[in-house]
Image 1 (cartoon, rainbow, N blue to C red):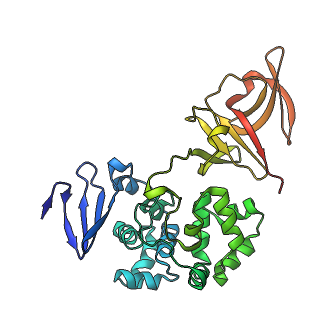
Image 2: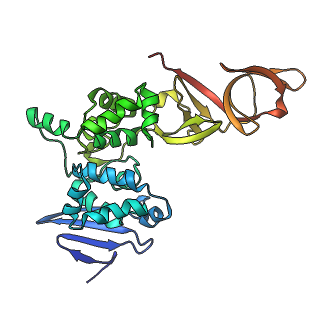
Length: 331
């Protein structure tokens, strides 16, 4: 059977076709008298072929799939997909998860496809799996989502790849986090902190169901997002996005970067290159750091921060951006 959108294959109540422009997967879930669609292709800025070009962290992606289904064991997923349990183990060995697994999971659970594949948070398009429980049922649902599942969602919400990053941010030992996984513990205080810190839906963090970010009628949020990085060994490492109050930032946000530190964070305008007095992101011998800068006569500058204070020629440094404001954490 042919369709204007491309080749269509009927699989039970699902129709899977291809975008003619980029060969991306286009899925429609037929549910008796209605249908819901997942149209992820070039028009939605998500090409399945682009995903194939990037390395997928199979263990992390598998954790997200298990979390979306509410499974704790690979065996449960294998039974749900109608495959042998050894197949799931082989995905991890080869660091490859078949694309149809992500699509099937997205259709079955309503989880966002971008999040399943690479942990990128976005508004869920489907209304499948909304949290409508109350009282004891809701409590039981939350407590059943502890351990590795809730930890995976917390890490993705912060944009972290390692448990140590979460521990450093919140001052929690690695042993404590490992205990959550070992005992299937639900860290309610951390979940609430994460929801307030990142803007991710508390319902989604707690249960893995519903929209990851709250929006009306599934419409994209108009909230401003800025690239978020961490300064490690003189380099900026991407760790996700930061959502500020729009009144705090300049109108032009194209070159803004939010640098998240352990006790101090900075919003930096990387379009500024003519150095002057103030606080700057400076490159010295290829390594970046934040300094307070005072220009001196004779083409010299004085640089200072908590670690060092010195004078040098202005030609010895490379301005990487002007600090717009500094945020200090006192707890």
